[in-house]
Image (cartoon, rainbow, N blue to C red; front, side, top):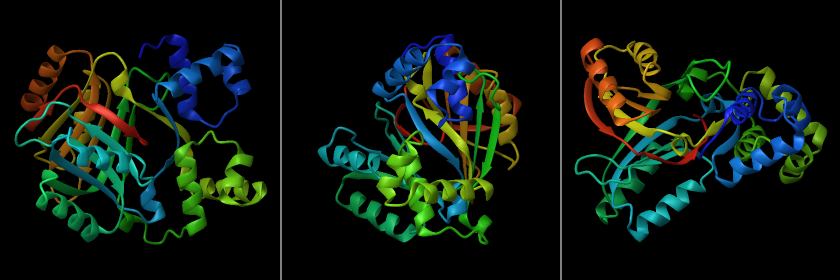
Length: 314
């Protein structure tokens, strides 16, 4: 999808506040409300943009699980499985590698879940009946993100610690969780519509949102994008980091080569998963060489043309 400088201004303002009105956007961007409304509908029609709350779900009592699978993406069973996880409100990221490679995963997703054995049993069953060839489950420790192209004047290095155990003292009601997940569907939803869906008074809903913000459970209302739709190539690099604090250096290096980058770091392993958009194959090879030579990173696998099926955080 092609975007211009006006699109970037709109997207950057939505990154800071995805619930702001068309009138507010019009004043900040310098375009008419009609023009901005037209462009928003274009993003939505192309499923390019998601309006989401910026929330660390660990504070709501959820762990983040990264699940990697190797399978036949064309099988009917897997197509149904992908459709199911796309509709699962607790799945916040899905990416596929359209080109099948032996001994490499081609479907990955991030799930908000605490039932480790239940997920393990389900995937083991799918492995037993040959629906999937192999799988791994990682408990996520942190996510680091950086941007140097799509957003104007936005923080370029964002780091979030994960793990429900970090926030044992946090208390969130089931009603508040339901509210957050409803906002995760579309954070631009009008207050009256949000109230109707939750069967609560609008004042009550507004009060609960303010409380979640005050308690830093919702940091702000923002957006996530299907970055694979933009110019360049969306890639994934799997690597081993020889020291635990190298991810910050890698993000800094990555932003010299990639437009945007996201590093997913699990607990109990030095294996890391880097996703990002890069201009071309030549730059990707240069970046990989820098990773190996400058930072002593061991590259396990690299894949281009990764497709994003769902994105609620990057």
